[in-house]
Length: 397
Image (tube, rainbow, N blue to C red; front, side):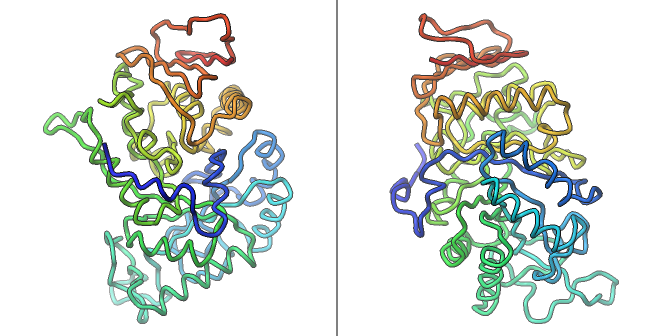
């Protein structure tokens, strides 16, 4: 069993209410191409639907002016005129989100920054006094910010407070969290007090070489993410890359992978569910980048798994809006069942079946689910079918 420091569950600094209640459902409200589409205006039109669907927080793309249109090579952090739209449109969007009780999550890119001065070889890589030394993995191509200098941390904290108090962001997504020490994230959260935050601590899963086959046991992988959450003082969730890696192999006829040797879910969700932000796709794993895509014909099985299980589920914009109305409605149906049955990040889970073509589980003794093409249904007259589709079904009491 991994090391899980769950004492933090009860005593988060500031109010920590979002993490404590565990009833968050997030949406990543952009993809890799969104900068081409007048994005702040586009999202404003989607707000009634996002609110009605029940999302608590929408992760927005980086709002800072950037050398790259996607926003991940920021220049002046205080300039909020980006390829997604003007500062004026952004602030209008955030105000309307607040009126509809959807929190805006800012994409915090603080590991590296592009300079406004070109170096000799023609790239924007000169940075006066801030750059080069990294406290984590180096991001290549632009200067790494050196947070060992107190004035650098002070500047970042001031900027985060400004995003919270003046701009209207409530939540934070810490991009490329491997690029700097976890204790810095702890300091930034304590000083800027976001309502909810999540770290993008991406790490490679364990594979058996030379076949490059995913190992059944991913304990060391999830332990590294758990350690990161622990070093942030438990103040921040982390994307559950372990669950994604296992789930997208499991749905291809290896559903036995979804039960670990202790009989628990095999991802971060199985060890520290209240900090596991589960997802099946993001702008970098999927979209047009497609670095590590979820098998497209199994997407609804993926959502059935994360939206019925403990953890903090995250829906991807493309699946919700670009895959046609039926996928949107099927996801909303699963979200409705989750809320109606009050399934949350700490819900209990009992795995009933985990074999090649069938996985089934009971959550909080009031919801039953199955995925895979094996036939199965819960015994007992108290269960009624709540929703079903190709290779998935959910029952409720």
